[in-house]
Length: 283
Image (cartoon, rainbow, N blue to C red; front, side, top):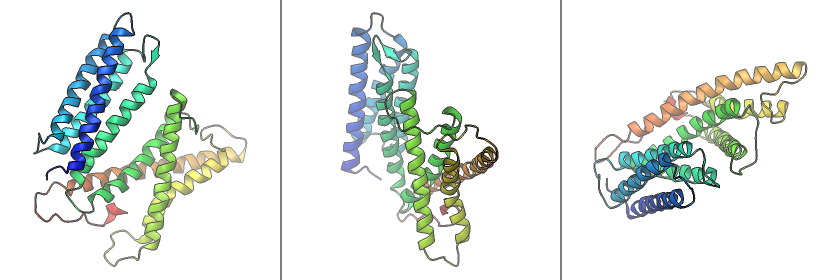
């Protein structure tokens, strides 16, 4: 399936922005610092090459694997940016690279979304199915990161630095939790079918288990999920954390499985692809 003009333009724009950012970073590396961080320079050259491949995709190259090509560009940009950031110890001269790394991450994420859509558009229904899997997986990942990397502390700050990263993860956790609520409402309002693999009540339990458990935990701990409390309140906190861990494990497994199913439905080369089945994985 050929790329639409809109997708070609989007890929070209994102690749061009990536290339321009690499050129600007290389210029700063040689002009702003007394001694260029050569590790960063090397990875920026790699980023520039990846941007060139992205522009080639937008012009119709790699027609047999356009989604994979864009995914490789996105992965290269993300990996090179992180490794270059670490190689430069997070700054060029007096210029901190925190915001730069965040912008690069967003560019790579946008390219990754385009790569996914390039594949998912081949099969009707694959896109919404993959979105459902992404919501479940995202909920598990964001809550897991909050509990392990940020000691269960919710943050509303989006300024550069650790606090800003905590704010982004918190925002992701809230958005994906809202997604679980909406999917549960959709399940509740959709009439049950005789051939449903999973009963309606079981799907609701899976979709609303995170909002209910996380909501109770936030209510008990007032946003400090891993901070010890006094007496019976701490026992309740530990019990809710245990339930939350089981819920997140289930969501992660279900989300990854749904995403795999969505992409697997797009591997066919038939002229009339079949919509993914609405069985256990769609719940």
